[in-house]
Image 1 (cartoon, rainbow, N blue to C red):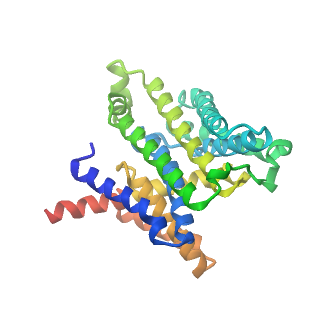
Image 2 (cartoon, helix red, strand yellow):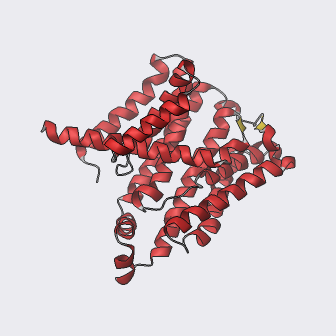
Image 3 (cartoon, rainbow, N blue to C red):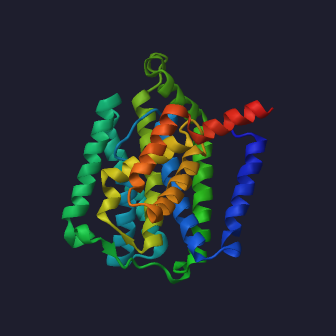
Length: 307
C-alpha cells in the first residue's frame, strides 16, 4: 500500500514534472516526455512481472500494436483524434486478450516462449505488410492534431495520461483482484486449491498490461510522428524488462524510476562511447548481483537504516 508519506512524494514528483517546461529548454522537455512514455510502458509490464510473476518476452507487441494502430487510424484513415487514439488502445486490449488466452494455458518458460513467439508474429506482420505499415522504412508523417503538435502542450498531455494510467494501475494492484494476483504469483498451486481461477486472473492481468502498453505505444507515435518496425522487435521487450529490474519489480514506482535512469544513461553514454550497450550491460549485471531488489529496494533499505 502507498503510505501518506509516499503520496506526498508522488505529489511533489508530479508538481516537479509539471514545472519542467517552465524552468528548462526544449531538450529536457523532449527527454522527460519520452521518459514518461516509457515509464508507463514499464509500469504496464510490472503488472505482469512484479505482481503476477509472469515473465513475458513479448510485451513490445502491444506497444507496437497501439503505435501502428494510432498511426494508421489517424493518418491513413483520417479518423478524428479521440476516436483514433481510443480505437488504438482498444485494439491493443483485444490483441492482448486473444494472445493471452493461449499464453496463460502454459506456465513458466513455456509461457515466456509463447509470448515471444506471438511478439515475433506481430513483428513479422509489421515488417511484411508494407502497404499498411511501410515495412522497415517505418510509418512516418503521422497526422498529429494541431493543438498537440507543440512540445509543451504534448508534454502536459502525456503527463496527464501518465498520471491517470498510473492511478488506475495503483487502484488495480491494491484491489482485491491485485491481492489475488499476488497470491497466484506466490503460490500457484495453493491459490488454485482454494478455488481461485488462476488462469482467468492471469488473463485479466495480461489484458490490462497489454492495454496500458498500447496507451504508451500510441503516445510514442504521437510524440515521434512516426513508428518503426523495431518497436515490435524482441529488443524492445528486453528493454522494458531491464527498466523494471533496474528500478525494482517489487516496487510500484520502481519500473518508472528504472525507465528514467535507463533513458538518461542511454542518451549520456551514447555521446561518450560507442560501446554504451556494454556499459549498460555491466550496470545491469551489477544490479542483479548486488541489488536484486532494484534501486528502489536499495532506497527502502537505506530508509529503514536511517530510522
